[in-house]
Image (cartoon, rainbow, N blue to C red; front, side):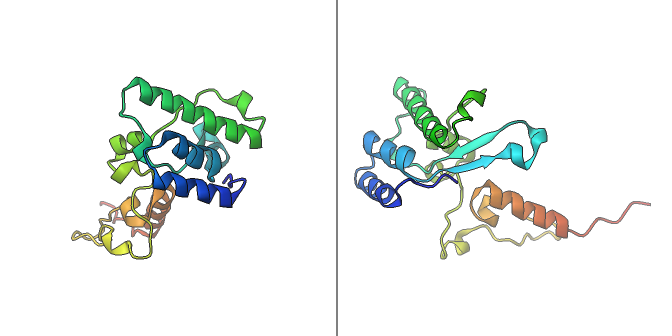
Length: 176
């Protein structure tokens, strides 16, 4: 996690952006330059998967132009540059080691996951949100739903819940 340099300033920036959600300048300042970033170093978790680092910023889809437009491509470049510069200030050796970088926008998440408003985490996380999640019980014994809509938001929750379910599953009887 790369915490906001000034959490109060980040909060105020997000408030300004929420008051004018179509403003690109306010949103980019709030979400890309001021707010905390989630950083996952997959190489540290499993080196066999390659050297992959994910930088995740919360964002609001309303200030994003339509996909496949010159404005959209320019905004993706601006976002990628802003995030890489920010991470580079805290991890200066990282910049020279980047082989490939790509930014996924809320439109990307909407397209590939169909999550509401392009949410990168899927299900809404709130104390009162649990009743809206898919029921954990399936009518066929031994079959479970495993997704961010069951386990809680994000791929970490989904993968962790999947590992838990797999480790607690009763092995099938061997065929004779």
